[in-house]
Image (cartoon, rainbow, N blue to C red; front, side, top):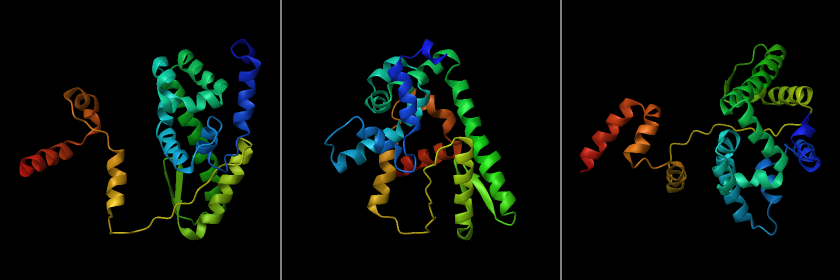
Amino acid sequence: MWGKFFDHNQIADFDKFRNISFESDFYSQTILRSYSGITKAELIDKRLKFKNSIMYLLFDDDLSRRSTFPNMQFLKSSYPGVNKWIELTHSTIGKKTFALILQRAESYLLLNKVCREFNQLNPEAPFFTIHDSVFTTENYETPLMQSFQNCCNDVIGIKPGLKVDKPVRNSNVTDVDVKSVWNQLKKINTEELFEKNRRRFLSINIKMGENFMKNAA
């Protein structure tokens, strides 16, 4: 079936993509396939931009943007067959259905497999999910990681790249912290952008912003 849409090299891309070591950093590996002689600082910068663009890469069906937006070129140049499959999926079932399928696949793996096994083996353990993560107490870290490993190996046959983040309470905010958050903000400086994003804003935040501007004036 795939031969109808893909040539041999593009089909081989699926095996290359599947054989990525997801235990290490997927984003850096993909970038390094496209660049040689890149410095560590350049890699960190490109990795952040690539990671922040991954949702557009998966769900933006505008072919002109996909062919010109620099951060979308990493996957296309490294795994052109995989990129073509994404674009073909957009044109056949649509990006919304594609997003729903990915969401359900992730939910099946995380909720129905990982969390189910972890809960069955550790019924006394407290836990809850946050997007693609599971939050529990430190003493259950090892059994939770084991459930992730077991289920990913059973369902997809690949060792997952897992990371443990431990929350740190720190009331000291530095200039670096402020700059990091500020750099992630997108400017809403036109009426068109505001109307486009209106539903994402809480009315109370808009009121607080208006009051702040009045007081600042």
